[in-house]
Length: 440
Image (cartoon, rainbow, N blue to C red):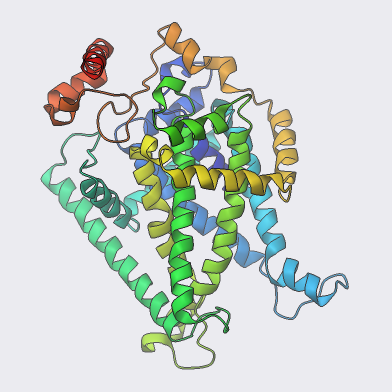
């Protein structure tokens, strides 16, 4: 299931700009999925539910294959057993290569074929159901706050909510914020009281600082993958004019584009490395003392699993960054730290520690007969020449979006913005006006 969760994300985000009518007949089941995610704000909803699915599936995998304390294996020396078995490195590499990386390698270039099945559609439905529950709606509050602080409030692609719909939405946001606050309280109190599985030699204050730094790095990496796939099918001229955006895109998409799946492998290693530390910080260990906050043993058992920390990391270190990146992909590409982390991920991939993912991906691709998307729908430039209707400017206005418009467009009436989205001639006319203003 984890392979479909990972590959499905790469496919659905990457196919967003492509006119879905181009593959309606050739990939009918993929069309069913994109017909959902390309509508309104459904892509954001999918990303929200999908990320928590990753946490739940990985949590169950690690619980089912977790090492037993003091166990030995095949007569290996203690130091080797501690690193690969008791330390969980072997399980981490297996989970990454089999459950995540090989699917992302194939889905980065074979998006249509990868999700052209009912299992992908079922996974999409589950993710949408998780989002509907409201458990992680605090991410929307963070997304709206970031947009407002940036001076570019994030507008919904849907019409205004009715009174009942708005009340239900904000109720779920309040519920999610309450859950998030409780998760933070439990984790921080346990950490400062020395009641976690953190190494005793690390001072609590230092652990907290490193924890939040690593959480920000995880967030950047999560947002980067969304931004990279969001512009993967766009023309080079639509990928931003910032020097770091150009350097990043040149590095990612030059040649056969092998650096994009290479980034996904290196990125996963970075994320897993950060998660190893975060797991120690967020897993509660009362060391024989009274339960935290005096809760019953059953509740304390839930604390001890580290699941509350996982919920906190999912919201603050993952989903929120992805939602912001989906709204402002070019702004993410223009961040110098994005280029630095891209270089780091490619360096890690170059070490070869997860090269097995390429082998597994090649085997899967051969068995499933995956073809690159260009075989079915051509490149973005080819589709543009043939007027095949890519929506490369989703949406066409606002900071971080993909088509330049004159400055007055941000203050334009909503009816004009809607017209620009629907009528290509209007959009092109305003772009011509903008170019003349820039050259004047």
